[in-house]
View 1 (cartoon, each protein chain N blue to C red):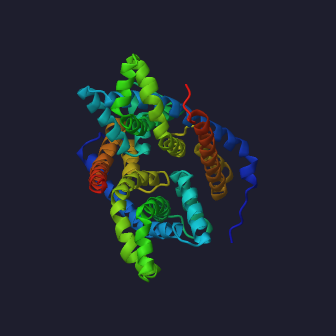
View 2 (tube, one colour):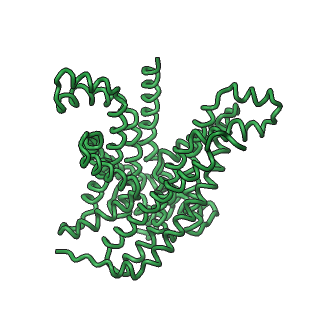
View 3 (tube, one colour):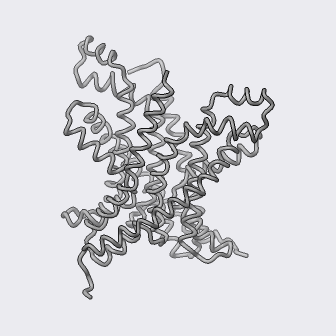
Length: 220
Length: 222
């Protein structure tokens, strides 16, 4: 086998197949971030002072520092708490925390966008916190939340590319590896970019459509 | 039990400061040039010329739906095969400008579209030239409207700029990488670097709110 091989169909398919890891990582971070984000959002709108402060600080720190540094800190931090260095786990944990902060902030806005009268009416009817959130506030907030959440999913998918830097072989890292073997960066990174585009663009269009539909439905 | 050792980090703190300075320069330069690109593209998008609008739309969609890391790899590794060879720092600047331009265009376009038609007609009635109308009647109030969105986009740009360390530009994240490989105090180095980014983003928000008070205060002045 020659040292530098041409960029052909097999190389193309290797890159395409690596997209499954990008999708898997995005799915894990999105699911984990969904749970964490809901928790953060609820803490953020809570009546008690301390939970609100903690959630605000969490959001501030994650929105005020680069995702790359968050990845590095989790990656090297795992060593400190005695875990073996594992790019897969580090990327999943870091992206989950990152998504929790961003979704928490997005969903806080959605919860606050529900007219306060709804909450007051539920309280007046004697409905307690859990049921009030579960049956009155969150269902209404979730309708507002769909479009910006899909928009954030695009950001998250793009964010998973940084896992390549800590050595997790997803789409971007596979592109680097193939580029090292074929040395045709134009084709390789063009292909990688095209695959990201295929993953993200439909979601962007969907988010925009839903936003438009929602603003039309609520503008009266 | 892990023993934290911050001594080597602070011994090499001047390297980190130098990196932070480059990050600030890089982000500010990218924002200024990116804003010019954004205003031009937004003007092109709101103009009636269909092919121009299509080209700008493609640019925006491609940039917004691909990761910055791939964009910078494409520019740094891919463009030389077209004959455009760039140093890491200039490739970083180009990538940041191209990236910021796409997001900035959408923000400024939203601002321009918030200007009511009557304003422009009033400007025409007063005998202002097309350029004067664009500058005083459209751009100034439009920028005021989208100022908060632009500032948060700038902070996002500064945080994103850490990715340019992947092509070994000399920014703060790269300074962190170098210090890390010299000292092996990985966690300590990145904790300090992360904290420096946090300070920079809080600092820039403060600067922007001062600018907002100075530049966009009412009553309106020239």
